[in-house]
Image (cartoon, rainbow, N blue to C red):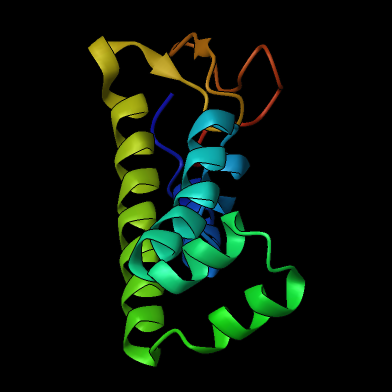
Length: 130
């Protein structure tokens, strides 16, 4: 089964919208969770005030105040870097799945499929060009 470019494009677009969505779309659940939580983790590391408010005992008001103190440049850098890296990761993941050891994998369910048939026997998704 050849690489389905429509599915890869959709996964990349979803990953641009929000880190981890593209990975969830292709059912890579662990990676989706890592990218989703990674954005928050990077933001916490980039802003010590926010980190202190999250793990401190000051309450929700302190957390909101600390989040307002984050410089715009830091927010933009974190958002762009996480989205670009997450998008590249989902694209590479799908490319590797399509080329792994000459075995064909379904783009929908990621299970190994028979290249001699035009659909995935596991999820019945049609191959590209059908």
